[in-house]
Image (cartoon, rainbow, N blue to C red; front, top):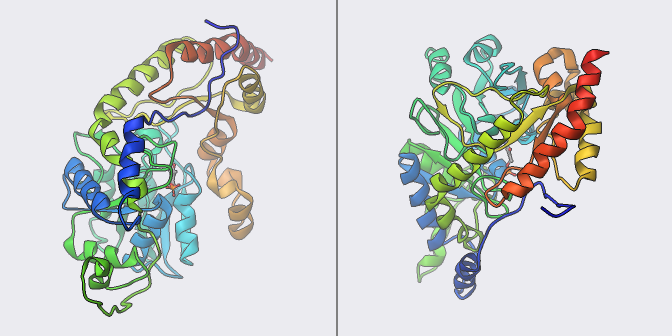
Length: 387
Ligand SMILES: *Cc1c(COP(=O)(O)O)cnc(C)c1O
């Protein structure tokens, strides 16, 4: 092994074949949404066993399109976990509705059906469970909690979980809509992108409109027709369609998603063995779920920022996923939240860091990460625990 290894936090593994797929789109007259995207939508719907899929230019814009389709408006409440990426709450806030933050399970960091039951009010319009780090929340349990509230929509945040399962079921099985992100670091990625899946044909029709300015569907295909077609705007929508230039990167990754998951699973197992006897806290596996293994985190508590410096100095890129959302300045100032309102998320967010995990991570690189944590961070933790 060389003396100094640089291990980036993330590195894609696209190939010259991917560049050729983009070049094929460049050779066509229109670069934006078209036949490539429609094929990918069919591929995603088939993979998840649902009737409909719509590509979007991000999770965030897809979620806005979905919440608009569900009529989320000022005065409504939407239940979101405190431990997630800010986007899960921002989409609610952007529509003038109120994100109602709930704390998460202390061992899996997932939003629970019990938390949903406790936060439910007559104003609740939707819930956004987040399949954090790749493990799926108990959607079936949440559906049960909402059995007398058919007016409350379930929108799954699947940004970390394209390929995971729970009780053998994939995202989309229990929700009204499930939304993926193809942002550059995600398990399936095209730089920026996302997708919505749903089962209801009427919702699918509405989503086609809210995804594109609220224009009626006949207008959306206007460039395919030889004669000009007038269009109408029938509702308010966002601009969320994905261009074929980016969609062209997705088919091979979706086709290989299980094989790629297997590679990350083996890396996760090596991390778990490497840290099994040590003082760092790990996310507990949820029973009966196959995690999409999106991220590997260690919780080191009060020495977190020192630990990040140590890893960075050893050439290792790390992340923090996430600071508790209600403790960010914006949400704390807007709603008066304090850390003690969501203690599990606040503690996790103050003490966690995320290690490199991706298909092209080599064993030498991973050994360097594990050795650095064991050699330089364990002693700090053991000292902290003694004093
Ligand atoms: C990345 C991420 C998002 C946002 O995805 P974009 O495609 O960047 O909009 C939302 N939720 C979670 C949990 C994420 O990690």
